[in-house]
Length: 233
Image (cartoon, rainbow, N blue to C red):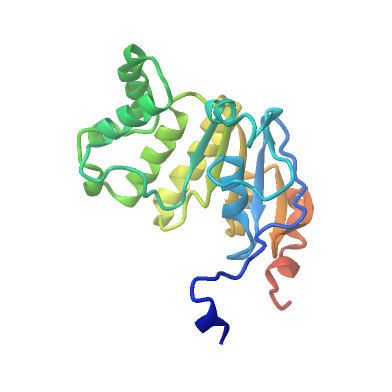
């Protein structure tokens, strides 16, 4: 009867509840949890694409709701399934478009694209339409886009989902060796892949039913994984 009386009413769902988490500068913190735990919602709040109903979230001491432009200028966000690229445009044209959106100096854009294409081995793919790129190349392009303005903080939402083992390993190596090891980026990486978290992260926070239920260094944190993912011993 409620559906008949109020056909457009929606039940309010609380995706996150009293989440408290800090990411040490220069580290990779893993955000692990089962599907539907709230990982993507948390990342989208931090990336300023979703407004929280309450609470406070800061990136480099800038509030994500009050200093949105400043946060975006210092943040890069890499999605698992990249849908914001223009499929008919080439990889190069897409990067130019997003560089302009990031308010980059027009004269610096071509050189920055060249640097990133060399770094991520996109040289042979730059002038292909996005729709013709492999899943692995699309993910590399997503990382290149996030790096255009050289952000200090990176957010990753399941960066290797849907990739074959070889492509996944190349992405992980790039994150660990280049972004963390050489560039010293601070990163929050959401995944439900325990092997990936063990390989990449310095610390792990477990998110379950919208709450952080545990946070610790990798070795200690992984001892609690079965409990979080409800795996029978």
